[in-house]
Amino acid sequence: MITLLIVDDEPIERTALRRMIEQGFGDIAIVGQASNGREAIELAEQLKPDLITMDIKMPGIGGLQAIERIREAGGDAAFIVVSAYDTFEFAQQALRMGVRDYLLKPSKTAVVLETVGKVADEVKASRRERESRARDKERLCRMLPVVEADIVSQLLFDYAPSVHLNELIALLGAPEFGEGFVLNVLLLEGSAGEDRPGGQEELQARLSELLETSGVPGWIGRLSGRQLPIVAFQEPGASYRQTAVGLGRRLVQALRRGGGPEPFIGIGGPSAGLNDLRRSYHEALLAAVDPSLPARFCLYEDLARHDAPSAGDRMPELEKAILEDVRRGGWEAAAAGAMRLVDLHESAGLPLGIAQQRIFEVLVIVARMLEEMGYEAGKPYYSRPAASFVQLKAETGVLLGRLAEKTALAAGEPDPGLVNSMKKFIKDHASEDLSLERVAAAVDRNPFYVSKLFKSHFGMNYIDYLTECRMEAAKQLMRDTDKSLKEITFDVGYHDPNYFSRVFKKIVGHSPSDYRKTLLRPAGRS
Image (tube, rainbow, N blue to C red):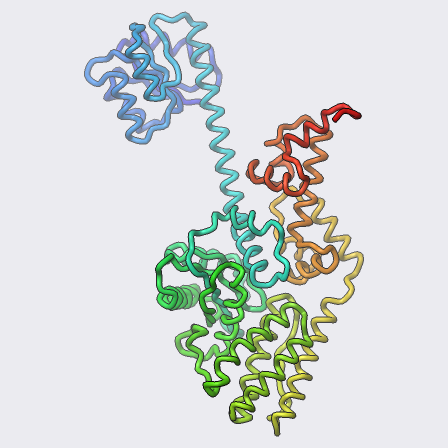
């Protein structure tokens, strides 16, 4: 229903126009009448009509001045000006104010109905467009946390990021950032409220709001194994330490106020760019090794080292290299790195007990990282204190071997039925906002397991497979229907025709419009 306000200083004109509109339209409701400009301004504010017919010549505040005042007050009604004076000056001024049309007094009923009907149709079209944009915005808001989590997972865990990583970052509107760093939020076991329904969504929403209010742009990863990674970006020229300490303190306070699990946050060092964030993530894992610190957060650069100066510079890099080897599945390289780490402690003259404790801390971090990647690693324990550095190396090799066996069993040859179920679910739901978590839930598996399964079995990311399904569906719609490209965009699961066009051209090799032209070209003609 379109609401309309009639403004005219002549009662007979208002009555005549009202009668014509009420008899001519069933979907236009006249909500008020005003006899001068001042009344028009007041009623426009009060009634918020969709359409206003405005007489130009009125005592006091004239029609054009009233339109200007209504616009300044934020009114978005469409205007039709009404006047007995057919002057170029009035028409020109009205057009500058965005008036939709012009009626001359007296006008025939047919002319009035045609003009009012045309503008009413424009108002309806504008309303539909606003509602469509609002729905798209709502869908995008629901999708953004999923996109953020996918980006973080690819940057920190995936050895070969998706070919669409840059498009996903562009979809988020990548922040203008200086250096980035990673925070690893560890939610400690045994805390109240950790298993509440909807806890993960509430946690991500709370952290997202905190990032926004703190002025630190960032992306929030997905919660897995009681750990949640966050990529934060400091403003150009800002101090890394000041930004990291301030954000760490605010995160701890916010999580404690929420009544959830007791948090501890490890904070990695600044990275030179997106490709260097994985190093910062490994540092964040190492910084969270001792969650008993009273501050409830720790910067990697503040870790108290018991190493001799000559060995101290080499040990952190070797620890990070071990984590990277494990992430890639290079267990032999990780074991060799662990042996070198033991040798470094011995050559530095450190006590055997301190060396065993430090190696144990590294193994705990390896187990946490594996849990975050979807493996049930369990916590590694030495059976007893080592009697020598030789025994420490042997025991460490055994523990790493057990962790490797668990990941090998978990990543074994998948059930063909499971793989087929995943493929069918994605194809059946490709037109929806389909997240990795939703795919994993459909087959009752961990999201990281599903991600790794896609890479090992299909040689691609799940989002690349989803994109292929959508492109095939788009090509079929172009072949079998006469739907517009905009309609096809929404039908296959995208919300932005420009983004759909870019992805289609990258995958298919032609823009959607060019591809459709090739379908229309007669066979045998080039």
